Amino acid sequence: MSTIVDLRKFRDRGRAVPTLVLVDPHHELFDLFEVGVSGPTRALENCLALLRHARALGFPVAFTRRIAEPLSLGAAPTYPRWINGFEPQRSDMVFDRCKPSCYASSDFAEMAEHLGGNFVVAGQAGELSCLSTAVDAFHRDQRPTFLTDALVTRGGKDLPAATMERGLAHIISLYADTDTAEGWMVATTRRLKVRE
Image (cartoon, helix red, strand yellow):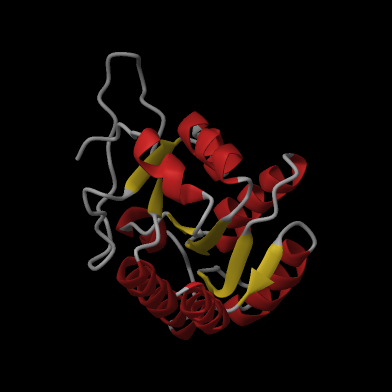
């Protein structure tokens, strides 16, 4: 799959409707997490429901993918495998980066600037990639919406995933707007009905 992003295709419709950004919906990152079974499964199910909702309503969809930095300039990058059901379509945007924040991709940063923060975030590595993206958005005076029950978080030996999820929701709310997956889907459906 090509990683070239043609932002011109998305400029006209980008500000009118929110763009759904799915952070790192690929296996390799998820497999490294030591998480309880219920947290990631529920969050990933919410992400899949959001993806279906966005596609059904014709919203732009962007995927971010964290890849390892090449060992040398001549080395080819290794791309992680998408989780089943989260494979990008030709009309979707894909942004690759080597650091946690989505803004580490200059193309993503350009899209976010053009959208003026009118995007919604769900996906994996909530306490790392999603949180660092929220902080970077805040420093750029952008207020995207993070769907806290669609952020996969990992727990540790002393901190269960559910506790991390609640703490992350509070911390992200200091930097960005927050909502639930269902709340956002209901609100966007109503907004579209009002426009019609």
